Amino acid sequence: MESALQLSNVTLEYPDGDGTLRALDDVSLELRRGEFVSLVGPSGSGKSSLLAVAATLVRPTSGSVLVTGKETGSLPEARRTALRRDSIGIIFQQPNLLPSLTAVEQLVIAAHLRSEPLREARGKAAALLGRVGLGSMLDKRPHQLSGGQRQRVNIARALMASPAVLLVDEPTAALDYTRSEEIVRLLRQVTDEFGVATLMVTHDTGLVSFTDAVARMRDGRLSAAETLVPAT
Ligand code: ADP
Ligand code: MG
Image (cartoon, rainbow, N blue to C red; front, side, top):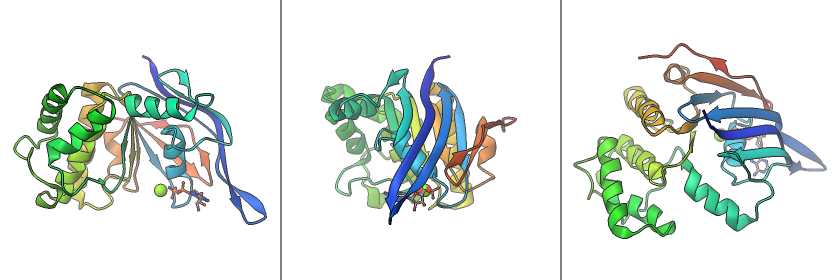
């Protein structure tokens, strides 16, 4: 299987008073398409920093980040932005939907940024919203949707570019347990169906059982991912 995301010996330092704070300390991680890995660890251990580096939003202090086999560190910013748009879906805790747009428009605008033809984008958006269980909600605006439904729009939007990698930061932090489990089951399904490599930060140890492996962060260091017996 193709390696979708490969981090090798990644270190990230932030200036901190007179010294530096090492948010990531020699982190290596590889995800293949169709793999779903959860990332756990205490607050401040570097989980969001790891996602930001994997998303090519932040350049590491040292080490390399390969997305679909391409080394990203040497790319100029415009090429990194294009690679991110085409290959990486990002899902944060808050869906950040635009209040005035309908569900289908939230997705179409993402395609518009990649210069996809409008008609095709609308068809693809409607199909993806149907896939995440929102086939009857295409024309609803965010305030007409529940928290779980908004997070489903967010997931569908992240899939619009047919990304190789999905990076998900605490997608269920604002949801109750039943809704949370539904969202993680959906992430499991789309990981399998679309063959994306999904890395999900979560607090919730109950949700880890839907993923293939769990990697633990502590003080910027990452343990080797432990493989799990899949839940059904
Ligand atoms: P987590 O997501 O596990 O809670 P973070 O990756 O957000 O952890 O943070 C890891 C460490 O890096 C923390 O000590 C945090 O304060 C620090 N940090 C995160 N972002 C920045 C930043 N932009 N500037 C300075 N320090 C930061
Ligand atoms: Mg965080």
